[in-house]
Image (cartoon, rainbow, N blue to C red; front, side, top):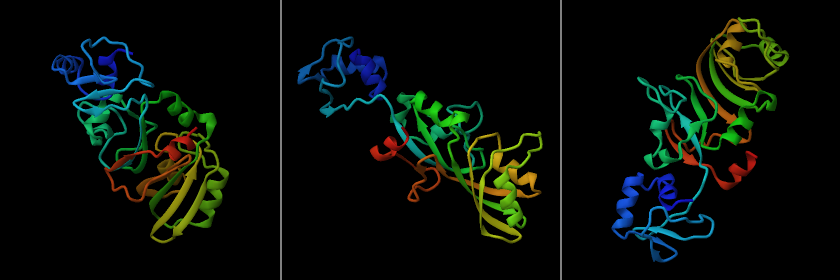
Length: 234
């Protein structure tokens, strides 16, 4: 890999900025001054330093975000704020993207990565990756609803959902529930409750596959996945 390409990928600057750093003798490869931006380097074995800082190359990044309301699950939008805007700019050079989507008014767990193969595995319909949500529901959620969700409900467009596990945390004029589903249809949780004549007023995703939202993350906060969490995804 070219030296300037590697450093650009690692967020150390644009190709033009990297060339200036090399010209200013700020870049070392294996302890020796790098004089050529096009120098071929091997990330797995070469030691690269920029202004005295050792650069640890990595191809992929994995970030857990507690998505707040008001942000689109997208990489860019002409008029709306997107989840990428919440990240430290140093990650932008990796071109991360959200794995799946949460609605603009939905909070909770969102995985961002630049690993397209992993994203495909997590989103493939045939994988039936479980996702658990916490929600506030306008209306009294009953055991009849639990049974209906366990059989699968028919949405307004005629689609019948896969069975889901509905757990009632509190039943009343405003009910609290947790729901685990195994597919990701558009607005699915909201539409499932509409199918039983109820309305979701607040929605937060708690889990996606083996990933569990870190309770220490406030809405809008994020962190890198641990090695253990990354391993669980494969």
